[in-house]
Amino acid sequence: HGDIEKLERVKELIDEAIPVYPGNDVLCKETFLNEFKLTIGFKYLFKMTPYDYYMQCKMKLGKQLLKKPQHSVEGVAFLLGYDGSSAFIKEFKKMFDDTPGKYKKSNVY
Image (tube, rainbow, N blue to C red; front, side):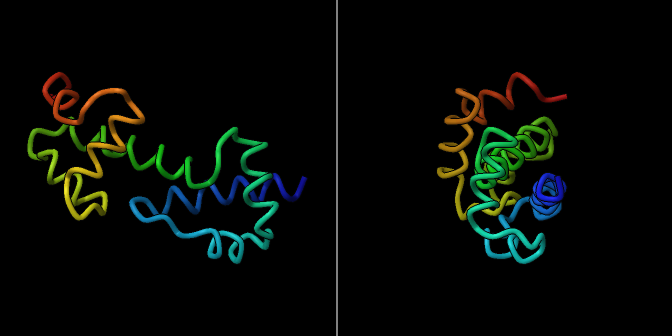
C-alpha cells in the first residue's frame, strides 16, 4: 500500500520536472523506492515505465504548445529541451503518428 503512494509520488515528481527527466536515481532517492520497485512497480501499476510516462507527458505538452500560434515547431522543440527540431519531430511522430507541423496546421487557435 505504501509503495503505491510512493509510485503515485513518482508520477508527480515527473510531472513537476517536465520538460526534464529527473532520472531514476533522483526518483528513487525522493521516494525511498529501490530501482527494482521503481521500474517494475511503476510498470505494473501504470502499464509503462517511468521514462515512457515522462515522454508521454513531454509530448502532450508539445501538443499544447503547438496549438499556440506564437510557437513554431522549432520553438516548441527548444522549449522541450531539444537541441534541434529533428529529434522532437521523430518522437512526436512515433507517439502520435503525425508530424508536429501537420498537427500544428490543423490545431492552431
